[in-house]
Length: 129
Ligand code: HEC
Image 1 (cartoon, protein in one colour):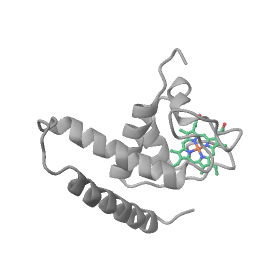
Image 2 (spheres, helix red, strand yellow):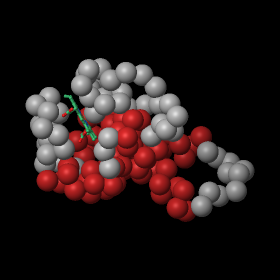
Image 3 (cartoon, protein in one colour):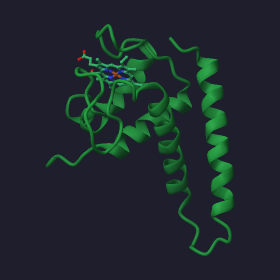
């Protein structure tokens, strides 16, 4: 199990690096400023994506396409068909997201959990897939 502090710091550094290079790219600002709510939810989803890459991608397909590396792990884009995403933070907090022995019991900071959910919601495939 990855210690909270270690994962948090690695993420923080990764996010800072992303934030800095982005600020440079974005200058000068030509487009109208996006709505504050969009900025927040996009950055939360970005945070969740970074976490998913670090902590989930070795078993789950985390993007819009592809099969999970672990044969039993559901691709993230299909999760909402079998799991109520709104209940995930609670289940993670309780420490048992699944009884599967291969799936570690993660403990997340609240903000990281929010990011993960924002990311999971963003990658859900339309029902027709
Ligand atoms: C070492 C492999 C592994 C890693 C790493 C892993 N998972 Fe899983 N996960 C699984 C497997 C296997 C299942 C299927 C469990 C089952 O069918 O009982 C699963 C199932 C799930 C489910 C569905 C649970 C349900 O009730 O159906 C969710 C949600 C989930 N994982 C989220 C995550 C998230 C978020 C991460 C990263 C923070 C992650 N997993 C990391 C192996 C993993």
